[in-house]
Amino acid sequence: MLRNRTPTSRYRASGRLRARPRGRRCMAKPGSADRADGAADRMWWRALNDASAGRVVLPEVEPLVREHLRWHPHADAALLRRAHAVAHHLHDGQLRKSGEPYITHPRAVATILAELGMDTATLVAALLHDTVEDTPFTIGQLRADFGDEVAVMVDGVTKLDRSMYGEAAAGETFRKMVLAAAADLRVLLIKLADRVHNLRTLRFQPPHKQRKIAQGTRDLLIPFAERLGVYHLKRELDDLCFEFLEPEAYRATVAARDTARAQDRSELDGVVEHLRAVLAEFRVKADVLVKERHLHSIHSSRGGDLANLDPFAISRISVVVKRDDYRDCYIALGAIHGLWRPLPARFKDFIAVPKYNLYRALHTVVVHSSGRVFDVLVRTAAEYRVSEFGLIAYVADATSADGRRAVTHRPDLEWLRRLLAWQGQADAQDLLAGVRTDLGPDSMVTFTREGDLVTLPKGATPLDFAYTVAPELGDGYMGALVDGRLVSVSTPLRDGSKVEILTGGDSGPSESWLTFVKTGQARVGITRRLARRRLEETAAHGRTRVAAELLDRGIDLIEVESSGVATAVARRLGYPDLDALYAAVGTENVDLGDLVTALLAPR
Image 1 (cartoon, one colour):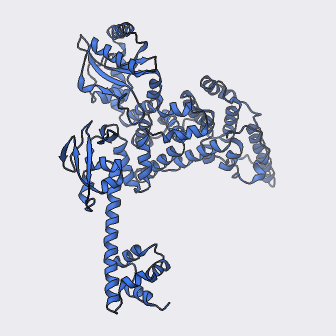
Image 2: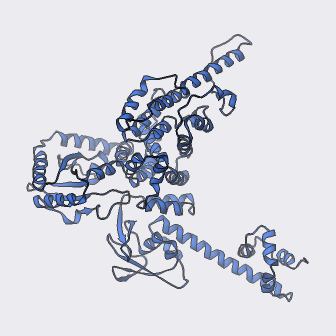
Image 3: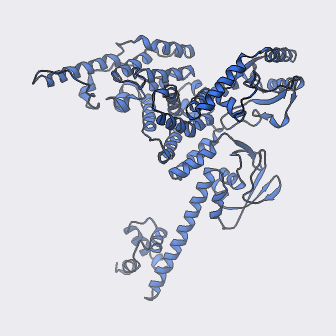
């Protein structure tokens, strides 16, 4: 629950705050330094009390407050002002690399989230997200003043920030991102907004750090933003990373886009007006908009070939159906295909088969009578918002903290549940390799025999399909029928394939399977099963050695086991069961002679 109450001057007395950071002091007379420090400390804590009590209102926060009230007219603006005053005081004297006061950063992060319509608690957490890491404020004090909901978010962001960048740490960073998203999606949204603002001001960092931060963003944060459907932030992250990682291509794309913008748009405008008129004839109420592609999309969609860019090449036509009824979308699609010739291979129905990030729309590519080829997207107004904000749309619309946290448990977020299921079983490097494939932009849709949808990365095999559906299906894999035909285990599946997995026997996975599976879940499942098989073989070898040693003394191991003596010895030696003890014998971590002596010792 959010709290907006007046705190007492308990800050210093509570002992929960770290010492106030010392600034550079003026020269003082001998013997007066302690008195000066004490007076400065008292003034500092008094000012913090005033800020937290709401007695300090700073005009710089008002644009943020206005934006928040635009989305949430009944929001607690006083709480937002109080959080800003506390953050302003705690960061006082700290500067960004740009030379700006540090408070400009958390205020910008909160503003980015306010523009997305996020709730008050998220904006308060955004304003305070660096206070626990960089100031004397503790998580306990933050919880006392702003409530548990805000404290949990700030703590989650702080833990993410403490993850170091680099290949060795990237897997652990991603693991924390997955866990943070599962606990409360808003933690990850604050982190995304934080990275957007850091990239906006990245030019003040040295070149090597620019590349490192941009590459980390492209490798980890952008795929996650896409999976969450937060395209509003993803597009800006795309372009900012493009600028720092491929500066020459970025500048060339900017120049080509600007040239295309300056060209005559009359033909494109004519297409829009014609489409509006035809939709009206079909009695479909819709807005027809021209949406410009972002820079990275322009460059990648043309494979870097920027020659002859025109207004059509840098734009998409977006049809936003006003009635929240998918039937109007299909009527609009029929009208579009009646006007211009469609390219069937490039048509995608994400309404019938939604994308993994809840995205629903009809995508078609058509050819104008002039020979111009252009994209048209058709969706409802509600889905248009989801297409921009993804899960944020559901989080922002939730009416309670529990509702906002529950968004990540939606049944259509299967990919997140799968990640949660196997992230704890993979080491950092396997996790990173797996998620880079699993969260990549190229995916396809396959179906079970019952018609259930299974989304996989392009190039995935029947084995990937099996482990995605259920780990035991992969472990028991014997073969697969794809569209009714028996195929080999390494056969790449195609978009729309219907797959049936055949199981039986106890052959289990093979080491060679690791060479062609594409998904992290399959890799982890195979590795786990192979390790279990090796453990079973080692335990069997160890048990054989113990049995032979006892038999030389005229004793049957089965009798020792059935009497409970062997289990008692295993537990006394610190092993959970007999299999673990025998495996230790098999690897010679337990001396065979010592174990036999313990088994035969009088009770």
